[in-house]
Image 1 (cartoon, rainbow, N blue to C red):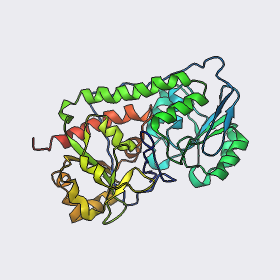
Image 2 (image 1 turned 90 degrees about the vertical axis):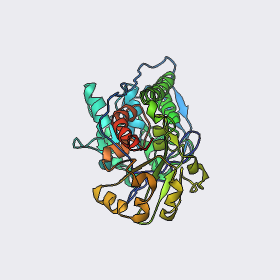
Image 3 (image 1 turned 30 degrees about the vertical axis):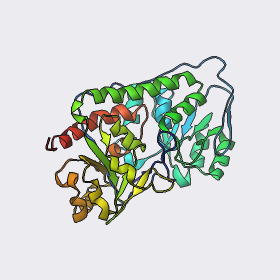
Image 4 (image 1 turned 135 degrees about the vertical axis):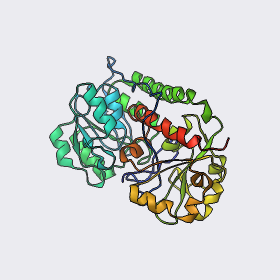
Length: 351
């Protein structure tokens, strides 16, 4: 199960080196809603003189001499942003864990097919990137600003095409910064603000439909096996998604010491009662079996919000994936599924 803990850099960031596998996983959420979020913002057009452009990264420079036509993406979020900018990649890293029966991440499949486009070819990424598959795609640019590619991989990829890596640490790029980097690489820098404000507006509009969320506190937790408990910090992307919908992060979360290099804190299941004032608990599970095992633990089941059932959680893999990342395609896809789940949990509060 591909999940990364994010590290705060300015707004939020995912740290770890491969979407941290939560074997015994913590949690997240899905399902239909009523005020569906507006369609994902899109943009197109390239200003004259946008190229050549050079983008610096922690691994080296990428100089793009002309408008890219054949885009390949690695990591998360880059494919979605490119699509929102009007350019569907020819190849993308596959994420089997979060895909649906189509074999694709559903929000990508929906956006491309709705536009009448050709679905990108998928290839293996992560620690063992299918270099041969990328070569066959003949890319003009390789976008990986939110990924875990290594220095050695960067060198190989750069021999194939200009490769845009992360500006600082692996899995450590803010969601809005990623949009700005990709827009620049595709010669559409002025469109970045449109996408960013579009995302913020969709979340704000959804929050406006739910005045009952005001003053409702929450903690977003995870587990990595029996007896474990961790809490995501306020700027972690999945937490940022929820707070942007109008809920408030329980102040106790800021009292936990952040685990170095992440946007989370490991507190141990024995400290679960410290979350007693959290009105809601958000979490996710890797599968139904894991969920049953985690919920069977007495200390876990005894956390007040969990005990009264005011929990927003899911083991639906696409939803867990989408609700952990903020980009132009995931946000509208998640909002319409999130609100009914949150409504149900809020309704169980004694207010």
